Amino acid sequence: MRNVRVFFTKHGRMKFASHLDMNRLMTRIIRRSGVPIWYTEGFNQHPYITFALPLSLGFTSDYEIMDIRVIDDEFTNEQVKAALEKVFPDGLVVTAVENMVLKTGEVAFAEFAITFKEGEKDFAERLNAFLSQESILTEKKTKKGKMKEIDMAPCIKRFSISKRFSAEEGESVVLNLVLSAGGENNLNPTLLLAAFGETPYYTVCRKMIYDSAMECFK
Image 1 (cartoon, helix red, strand yellow):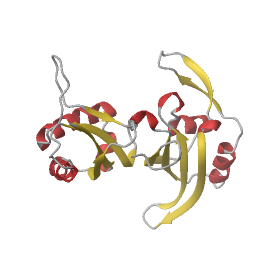
Image 2: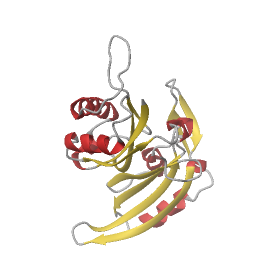
Image 3: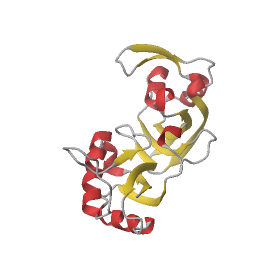
Image 4: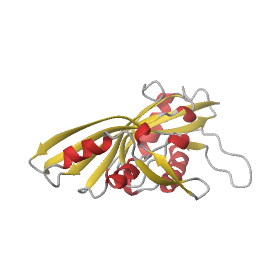
């Protein structure tokens, strides 16, 4: 028996699937795939599935990670990938299946691409000034349900802002943002943008997950 890490992308209509929806969906997918997976013990047995860093509702992603436990050591990672590809729905694409290297608790950062329909002329400049502040205070709900004031500035590892033009969508502002992720230091980009104030319509795509050394999380 071994732990296997499944890497996949999430786009299109699948962005409307919540983390709870994904848990249910992947449970059905694993059962349909025929992959010899380990089931939890007890009255309500279900396939062992865990996600490295749950994705917020409405976000797309180029780098999703799901861990499963394969009980047949002769069932190769290539076979796992092929079996999952046959049953993955539109919007989800398996990119790789590898043996697990790092524990999910070692996730440290996440990178996002946030695309805004450009609003007022100086929007990019105001966004840059906001993110460059030494302190960005807001309130965040704790696991116990209480509100706590936090400083988000130390959670911003790096950011860059650029402009993009396409004949279909016109001019957009793209914010590439690397934030602390995992555990108590996890910062959702929507919390940061809420503190910024009113913004044009935007979309969020998670591009990568990193470990503490800023290496791709494997």
